[in-house]
Structure formats: C-alpha cells, structure tokens
View 1 (tube, rainbow, N blue to C red):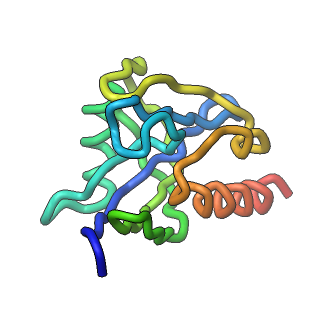
View 2 (view 1 turned 120 degrees about the horizontal axis):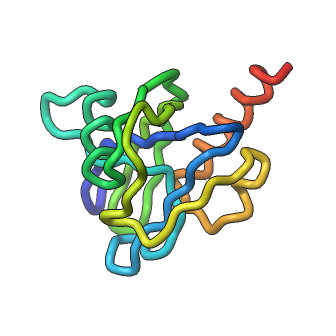
Length: 136
C-alpha cells in the first residue's frame, strides 16, 4: 500500500431542509473540492467526539450528532481514507470559517451539483437513500 490511511469523520449538517457543504481552501489537500466538514480521528477518540471537536475547531459550532451512515472507503493517489458520516444538527454557535474557503446550504437533491472530493460521493448517495426512506 502506498501512502497512509486516515480514519475521518464527516458531518451531514441539516437545517431547515438544507444540507451544509464546505469548500476546502486552496492551501488544503484536495484544494477547492467540496466536502462534508469533519476531520481525522485522534487515537482513543470516538468518531462522535472527533466530530464535535473538529466542527468546533473548523466552524465554531457545537453539533448534535445523530444517525451514523455506512462508512465510505476511498483511495486517492497518495493516501487512503475511511469516512465515517453522521447526520447532525447545529446545537449552538454561528458558523465561522477557520479553514474552509466557503460554505453552501443546498437542498439534498442539489448536492451533486458541486465538485466534491471523491470520498464524499458515496456518502451523498447513502444520505440521499436515507432521506428518501425518511421522506416516504
């Protein structure tokens, strides 16, 4: 295997029927790609703890971590990642961008219109499948 493997959490943050997408900054890996915000899980940290910490660090918000969706594995050219997605809501705080270039609130059916990091694409599909079940 080439490169390292990262275990990463990501938050599908819902508000008023919309979902938050965050654009990576030009200086990050995968520059200007869109993603669900989150970050690397520290040793001894649960995915839920990681998500709360990362979203506070990156966006200045406290989230309510809800349902876990299936993990998504993806291999980029220099590293591999396993994403652990959770459906979340904002508990408190206002979003302040500390690391990202931009954010967008989109209806779920429009998420695919952005240029996403490849690892996030299966997460979008799983989320849309989940949303359709809930909507029925």
